[in-house]
Structure formats: structure tokens, C-alpha cells
Length: 148
Image (cartoon, rainbow, N blue to C red; front, side):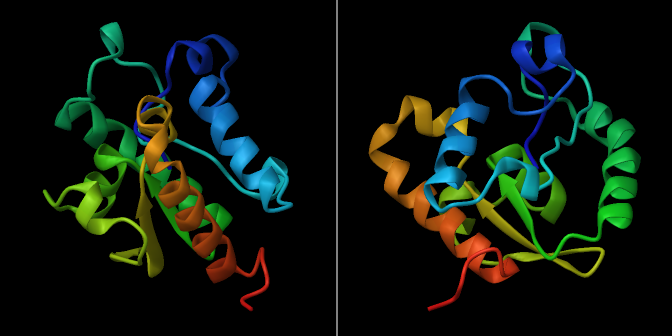
């Protein structure tokens, strides 16, 4: 789960199809996991003006849709991508750097595993190994990858 669609996502009506989504897809493929095996969504369902950070009232207005998606899909794990998604899902102000790489709480009894947003990684490629390790750990937790 990310924060909101970007320009490419808004245009195509599909989450994580721009450069950040391509990095996410490539990283998953590196573990042998096709994108079609995971659900990818956002807290906001439409792009905020000027691609700004979503406002609390906008997120509150969209959360019922995400809540329903989670209830319908019943995922084994929610991977929160970036500060906004992690802080919103976990109702915290703690930053992603302190939360990433481990289960930090639950939504509808489903563990929430925060990591960096792939857009952040595109700007900070030195953190790509941390992002990849987090995604690998999340995939092992769900059984998409063997544990040992």
C-alpha cells in the first residue's frame, strides 16, 4: 500500500505503473515473484493536486475503500510503502526509517510491515539493498518465498 497515485497511475487508472512501480515490479521479479501475485494499492484513490502530500481529510475520505479492499482480499501481510502509508495505517508519527523492516502493528488483524517507498529509493539508490531486503522478508513472511 502506497500513499496516492502519481501522474502515470492517474492516467492509466492502475497503481504503481510509473518509475516507482517499475522498481517495485523489478525488485519482486528479482525474487521470482510476478506482480500479479500481490495486490498493490494506495490510501488515496486519486492524485492530489500538484502531486502534493495527501491531507488528513483526503486520506480519511478514502480509507473506507482501502479498508474494504483489505477485508475482501484478506492479505497475509500489508507492506506499507513509505512514511505516509505507514503512518496512516498504523496511526503513528514515527518515521519510516525507524519502522522499516519489521511488523509494526496490525490493520484488521493483518500484520503491517513498513518499508521505504520505491520513489524514495529512486532518489536514494544507496538504500536499494535495504528496500530489497525488506521486500524479501515480507515475501518470506507471506509464504511467497521459502523461509530458509
